[in-house]
Image 1 (cartoon, rainbow, N blue to C red):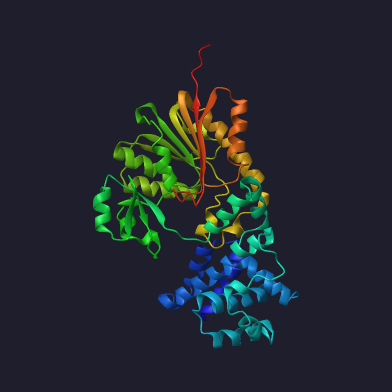
Image 2 (image 1 turned 135 degrees about the vertical axis):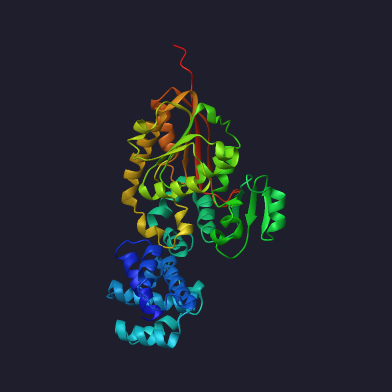
Length: 417
């Protein structure tokens, strides 16, 4: 198959079958004879990525031109637009011939070539600063645009929208069990000091493939976690536990602080995260970490006695996914929000029962949805007077730590009755 034919099949699986982009790409490439051809693979991944990152905009302008066009043919036209304006990895003459044949649109080439500047894609009748404008400009569902504007206000939400498309470097946390800050920045010219224990990577390549990451000299984790952990007085002898549905950030920060002496219970909210954590634990030889796969309703069965510090990282909307995954908006729906919030409330409640008196409950979510963050925490505090709020903070991608993270530190007071 040609690269544009494979691109079409990948997009069909992502959009029609709701399969994550990386899995759809991987499964289709397995069948291709030229899957080892780097240019072939790049042409597919970059073209599909461009289609997905401009999906709402492409849908808008294509539906205006061809209102009766079905989804499959619209997808083909999107491939033409993505290649013409952004990826430029597919030979256009052959692609255009294919598009005319498959769509039956004799003027499709003229339509695609009428756009020479990506900035001209948004129709002129869509008012700048409108919700529709931001939806098309930053490839966000309208419900997300409305929610962020309501939660954050127009000024802050506008900065947030822009930050989703602006790569201004990435923070990496230094693994001091392997290397010190000074030695690290001398070793790698593309890493610069940010603050104690954190470096800034501003390279163009995927940071996951950076040798410092591969050598475990730095952890590619949320920079704001380091800010949080510096505020905590952790005592592993008094007991630590964590319930998480996805992130290894907590265990990585604990490893930096305590190395192999970590002793804790770690509960994974799903099987995928369980395997991810198992690999992390085995790699760093963390023999005193007890690992469980558990639903949020089974926390009590896994914790033998109350602990001093309990980290709670439940399944959430994880809006940072808009930055990381071009197809993220397809896999998170507004209708999912109520069920997520319900689970977050239940997870916080179940975890709180396993915190000893004078202990801490740390609630962490990489999102900006107030209904998942402040609303959940303050509703919990209203119903559970034995807990008090020590601190809460919402960080955003354009802040100092370049992180989308909400955290709340709650303390269980001693009962003097």
